[in-house]
Image 1 (spheres, protein in one colour):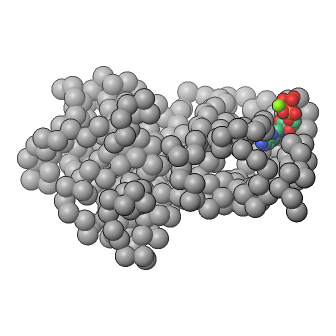
Image 2 (cartoon, protein in one colour):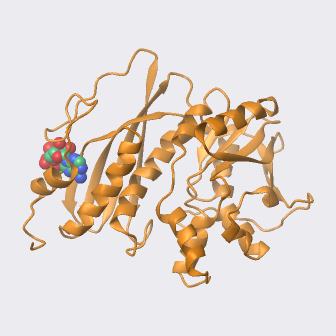
Amino acid sequence: MSPTTLGEFDLIARYFTRAPRRATLGIGDDCALLAPLPAGQQLAVSSDMLVEGRHFLSSVAPERLGHKALAVNLSDLAACGAAPIAFTLALAMPRVDEVFLEGFARGLFALADAHGIELVGGDTTAGPLNLCITVFGALPAGQALLRSGARAGDDLWVSHPVGGGLGDARLALEVFRGNVALPGDAFEVVRLRMECPTPRVALGQALRGVASSAIDLSDGLVGDLGHVLARSRVGATLNADALPTSAVLAGLPRELRHEYTLAGGDDYELLFTAAPGDGFAVLAAAERAGVAVTHIGSIEAAPDLRIVDGRGAALLRRFAAFDHFRAEP
Ligand code: ADP
Ligand code: MG
């Protein structure tokens, strides 16, 4: 089939239109229509954009890109403790590439189906490859997990895969950049973490009423923790040697391990705080969600972040977070 036979509306119909489930009206009109939420529920809304060369490499399989575009959005809902409902997709691409669209849609809808949510609308245009998803979620009014809720004395926790940890996505990126070499099987492990992150949707909801604050890790632990500290007007001590790592990352020199876990980016884990007396509730929430959590530090009244090693000695290096308008990390 010639790549130019499919027009805008045909491609929307072929790759993105499915029978509505919960939506009153799905794709095809000027607006989608969603039924109001039940009384006492609040709507949570978040958007995340993925730009080729900046958020993903052109080498990524379309199916994984479809997964990741939705996963990073679901991660934001997870950080607030919201249950996902629906999403929209704004898509710019240089030309109609059906192999790309077919794989992208497959990855996208597989994750959507896993969470029982539907695509209700969007926009499609020609342009440099760029994906923007907006997700809608629901939660009991007033129960959202916020960045501003951390209190002095709270424990600091991070989620991670059972047997895995932080920093794998950054390690995979450094392999792609040619800065680190890994055996093929080890590379596949960390590459999957970079290209196919698992949003902690169940954990976020299980932490409602348990965590005092939460954020999802997208730009690197130190920077994202900085947002929580600033919004909560507190400081923290973080034990760099307590950060969970995969077996692959554990084999790296200590300096790199610290750099990738503290400032890696693209982890899509939940960083959250809870009162010390709620430790068992945190572990129970993690168990229900089928994910591991590790205690990595504590919130303190004294401002700023203190990073220490396992013996309590200060680590002097500052770990900058990723900032799109500053230099590459
Ligand atoms: P309008 O011109 O009114 O903005 P469009 O012609 O762009 O509407 O889109 C037609 C329909 O297809 C709308 O319902 C829109 O929400 C939907 N749509 C367009 N692009 C996408 C996409 N990438 N994914 C899902 N739905 C889409
Ligand atoms: Mg349009």
